[in-house]
Image 1 (cartoon, rainbow, N blue to C red):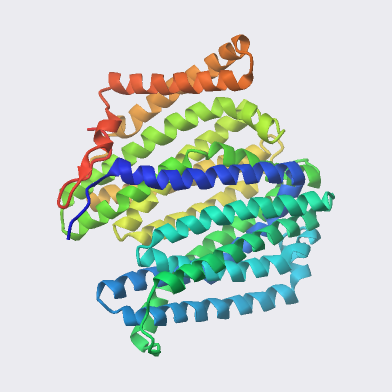
Image 2: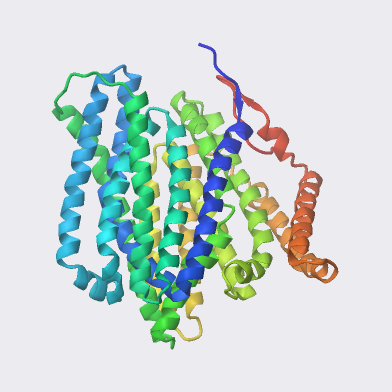
Length: 520
């Protein structure tokens, strides 16, 4: 069989193209929501969405992972006759959990909205939340099967189409309503999500029937498969549910703690809407590039570990961390000085420089935590990543509870809680990566060089954006010149430091060869 040669640059570029398309559409979607819902409306939607994320995690996270892993394993063993059994088992478990959650939510919707979420207006959206959950389950089970069978192009088509339909549906519904009842606005947002999930479910069902051919004989679910399924699903569902419960508790408690700091309820809810629906998505724009590089590297790391090549594992782990730093830090450093202007333009929401600097620090540390967690998963150390992730969420909740209620901190207490908890989680992940693989830490190369590039680009952007504004006809021209100059300066600084990123990214990954991603 002929093996097509690929580079890490090629793989990461393909993944980044899809991620950037989704992120661009998602950014348009958030601008739309901010225009029709406003900061307070986004706060109500965030409360409802926190409940939805808990239901989604409990019903789907373990089921989809079990479906994906088992379908890949059984196909590799030539046991395609078991694939319809896996699919049937996944749907059975999901719909059983979904029916239980539906009964609980419908019977206690007022209590959940008023007592748990802290806003009775959230109850209006619950019927559409449950319908969205059922359709998302159908979509994600099929999606997990396609991933296991390496038919990931279908999931990409589905996600892009789903996002486009969601934007159109939500726009039409909110434009038609044109009211100021934030409970109804949250309900209409989830109604638009239902339309998009209908498309994804129908599309993936069609692709399944057209391209996946199973034996016609109906096989029964045996005990071995059942045990394997729940061995994967139960721990992952439990950890995802715990993490989302803690995160949702933080979203619910934050407005209450901000009220203790002196804000009115409307101001506190607006602060939640701004940070979750406007500021954080803006600062996290580079995540598409970071996640693409991480995803492109994981198969190579797993393969190197499987053949016992410890030297290759050490090199790849170190280079992964270096690459994330060289992408995340400079990109965030350019974005932070521009964020107040971009936020005012897109969302009509002013942001102070102190606020976006704190957000930028949170974003960078989050990238490092995400990348080291992915490396642990690739090395079969996912239990460590689960513990640090859940522990980080719990620590963040405790710190936020104490710090956000202080009048001298307010919303900054929440930002500092996110920063410290993510930093500790990253430190723990890094410690275990170093302990388990023995890769060289090299702090100057791994962290010093990206930090130097970040500081340089931050200073350039902060100074020259103002200069270009005074000489250019429009702010967009000043923005284009500033970003273009930052890219040129970044390449120049890397060359001065002896780093040739593109040359390493272009090296071919051949069977048995070491995939190299960045410098040194």
